Amino acid sequence: MARTAPVRSISLLAALCVFVLCAPERSFSIAAQGTPQMVLKRQIHDFKDVLEGEILTYTFEVLNQGDEPLKIERVKPDCSCSVVHFDSVIPPKGEGKITVKIDTKGFDGPERWVVKVFSNDPKWKEAVLDLRANVKAVIILSGTAVLFTGKKNRAAIREIEVSTDLDRPLILTPEQFTLSGKVTYSISEIEKERRYKVTFQNVPGQRENFRGYLKLKTQVAEKPEITLWIVGRFDE
Image (cartoon, rainbow, N blue to C red; front, side):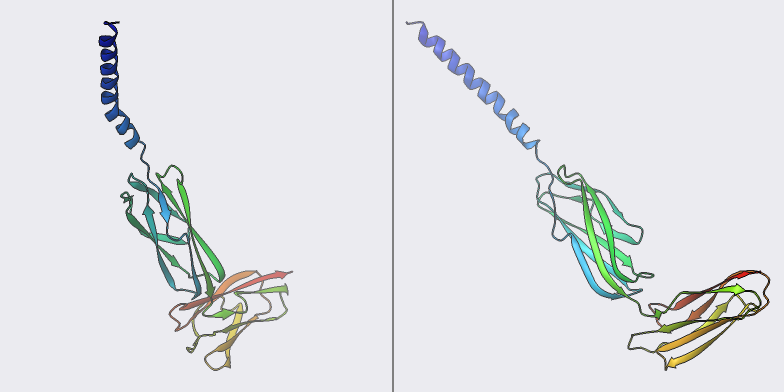
């Protein structure tokens, strides 16, 4: 029985050594498991009503609620918008920004743009930023093209109305016409400095089909130019 005590003491000492030696390794292992965590304050932004031609800019705020740096590896916008700036590294508990710019030229009605964000967050490697707007035309066209068909020796008339709902005057000035000798045109004012009618008439006897345009200049900054297309397809 006298020999039992030293054996127990040695066992307790060995266990204590194992605990002391393993404790730092265990805490290091826990720290190594830290991860970044991406949080977006807002993922969707709606600009509401905007005028065509406006440049829209919005900045999304990105939080890192993890305990490792969050890396924004890539930001990929669709083809109709661009990324002005983004913070590539966001520290733990820090905040970064992603700024997006949209040119609304050529858009009309309800529109949506998407930006994809790729990060090193293991649970959210790809996030989607969603931007929306209702684009209102500054200049309203009843059509963007006219088509002449039928017999070559028969004259026909086609019309397009051009108007605006802005509280600014609309003035149209011919800038370029590519179908002289094949088509004639005239511009008449229906409502002073607000509504116009553009009338086209084909010249009878043309022996070949044609395609061209009338380019009109405006004083409206958001849409300084209008192009009206003219196409002729005739039977023999």
